[in-house]
Image 1: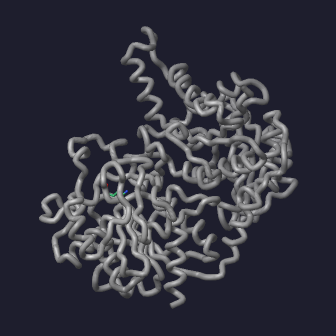
Image 2: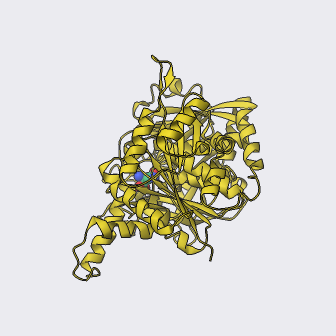
Image 3: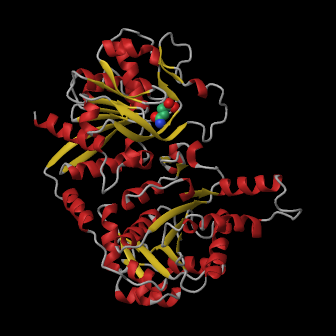
Length: 537
Ligand code: GLN
C-alpha cells in the first residue's frame, strides 16, 4: 500500500474564515488531478455530536448516509467532492473523551493514569488516520475546528504536531488559514494578526507549510514577500484567498494561486494531469448567467441565521444553475405569519418551501403557509417538519379535523395525524436516537414523485422522531392527499402529494443533504422548474 498523505488545515485570527471551503476546494483540485481524496473535520466542542445543538449555535446539523449527525462542513465536502461522507469524517472532543473514558472503565489502560497526553492525543491521532487506513484514499485532509490558541483546540494541535513528526518528512503538512484585514482608516492591508497567529502555532511546535490568507483586497507582491519572511514559509506557499461572489468559485481561485501544486510538492507527490474542472465550470457558467429569476419563500423559524438552512440554500443554488435560473430565497419567519398577513407577505413568491424544524414555535405560521400554497396553486415543497405541516393542514382544512396536530406539539390532540413511532416511545436520550440516515422509499408510478425521480426505489436521509400516522392514510388519500412514497419495510409514509395541484409535495426525509454540484437533487431541480413555469403563467 502506498503511503497515505495527510494535510491538516488549521485556522487563526478569527473563526468563520471559511476553512471548510478552503479544505473542500483543495480536496476538489486534488481529486480533479486524479488523487483519491477525502476530508474530515475535528471539532473541539464537548457535545458528542452536533445532533443536540440548536441551529443557532453552529448552524444546521448535517446528516450522512450512515446516520451520523455532523458538522455542516461535511455538507460542503459532499457538495464539492460528490462523494458520501460518514461518521468517521466528523470527530468531536466529546466523542474522543467518551471513547477514552469507556476504555478506562473497561480497564484497557492497565492501571495507568489516564491523561490528555498521551491518551487523549493517541485517541485523536488514531481517529485522524482511520480513513487513511482503509486503503481507499491517497490523501486525507483534516480540518481542525476552532482557532489556534483556543484552550479547547490544544489537544488537537498537539496531536497534529505529533502525527506530522511521526509520519515523517513529506507525508504530513499543515495549511494555516488566517485573515489579512484591511484597515480603511489606514488604507492598508495588515499582516500582523497573521504573524501573531503563526507564532501561536509555532509555540505549539507546528510550523505552517502553507499560509492561506483571507482578504478583501488583492495582496501585493511586496506584502506576500513580507508574509513569507515573517511567517517562515516559502514565497510560493503564501496563498491569497480573496472574497469571491460564490463559494463555488474558490476551487478556481485556489488553482490560480497554485494551492494544490504547492501542497503536492510539499507532499512529494507528482502533479499528474491538470485538474479537469470542465463540468464544474459549466455549472459555474450557468450559475452566473441565469435566464430566469424566481422568488422562493423559505418558511422557517431559524431564519435569522443563514447557516441554519445551509444545505437547503446550497441545493437551491445547484437546482437554480440546472434550470439557468437565479433563485432568490426569501426568508420568512414563520412565527409572524397568520391568516391576516399571509397574502401580503407571500405576494411576490413563486414557490413556497416549508422548512424542517423541532418544537412548537412558529408552527401555526407554517400551517398557514401550506394552506396558502395549496389554495393558490403555488408550487410547494415541504421538508420533514414541512411535510408534517402539510398533513396537518390537510387534516384540519380539508377533512375538517380542527385540532389535528402532531403529538410533538399537542400530545392531547384528538387527531394525532403525526405521531411518535412505537419504537421511539420508550426512548429518553436525546442524542443520536432519532430515525437517522439513509432509508429506502418505494415510489408509486404515475405520481409527481415518480416523475421527479424517474425511479421506483430511492434512498434518502432522515432525521426525525415523528411520522405520518397510518391510521389516517385511507381518509387523507380519499380526500386527495396521496402517499406516493412509502418505506418498503415499515410501510411508513415518506412522500405525500396533491394530484390536483401544479406542484405540491411533502417529504419526510431531507433531500437537501444529497444535492451536490455534480448531482443537483431532482426534487429541488423540479421544484425550481415548477416555480419558473408558475411565474411565466
Ligand atoms: N420535529 C419533527 C420530528 O422530529 C421534524 C424533524 C425535522 O424537521 N427534521 O419528527
